[in-house]
Image (cartoon, rainbow over the protein chains, first blue to last red):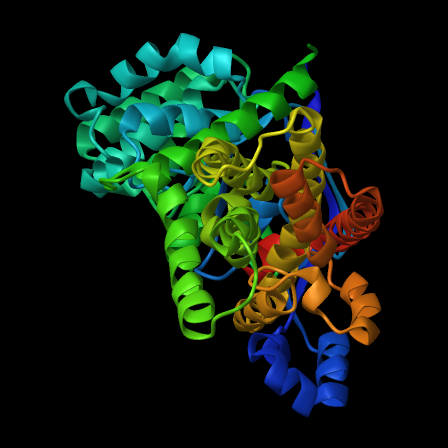
Length: 245
Length: 255
């Protein structure tokens, strides 16, 4: 049963500094040789050497300082970024839990956005329509569901986003510190849902700064620092070290 | 349909519908804008060129109108293209889905608007006593497909490159205006001095516009012009796809 669903092997990720490009064509032309050189040479390394594995059904927490590269890891897992070297293998359908309202259009109603977001997360139209009622119910936004979501508070957006993501039945759920904005009740509901996910043998990668949340849901924690896996191990052990650090 | 195909279909459908819905929310006149915009441009050119400059062309009003509709479709799509990926940054950074469908959705939306404008063109033909030919039945779909493919390639190219050189947006706006005056829209092909006519083939829109014209005004398919347009459509489509394929994996890095 210990099938590996996520495997990162010696992953290195650097971003070119798009310094000259960012300045637009004028800068590029004025400093053309320098620009080409800078693109080739100036790299900003985020991840140096990351290797880890996640087995099916596991909930893994990723911790580290701001800018340590946690979101980059999620980007690599979601397949929107490519590693500069090394390998990332993901088996199964992956659903990222989006940050506040990303993938939503402010002018559309909650109902319309459920369809849009569900499809973007990989569901078919028919599947979203079948699950729409369950999604609305889970979000507890029945009263507002036909209002344009620009009128929603950030907590309401988080509710809607989480509801869509968990209903699209992914094999792997990526959660990037988005729960913080929901109210206490909803946060607990989400944690509960994640527990159910675990029982269903689904894999969760959970990025958070909230110690309690990590303790509640994660089995294992990976601590990223300076572009490497600084510590890896059972949740209570690593978390305590992290707090002291 | 198997799942991947069905998925691409659903995604395109929902994205297109989103574009259309968003465009008309908070918009009192809605669909009428698709008609009003080309009409108002036609009116202004009519005042400038027919009334003030007294261009000697018969049926100038209808001539302008049949040109403005396809042109505005092209101009709107291409101008919007710069922002397609940028405005969808949050989802591009998080979700791995075929990004080119964002461009496709925009193009389909504009193509639908153009199709909805065809009855208006017919109405004007009727008012100005110009016959509506049976060739429209196959002529319009052919030109429609050619223009859609051309705009898609061009938009994909612009929206991709604009992520890496943000100045492109400004350049495109200027080039579209240049192209307008270098395309037989307010003047006709025969007015271009002969030594420059060959050069018009370098303008992808020039022969597409003359094709629309001969179809709408005389019910004829100008196959030579259509062939040139076909070549341009294929080139621009290929170029757009190639650049997009090459750069797509960097989108999340630069947004």
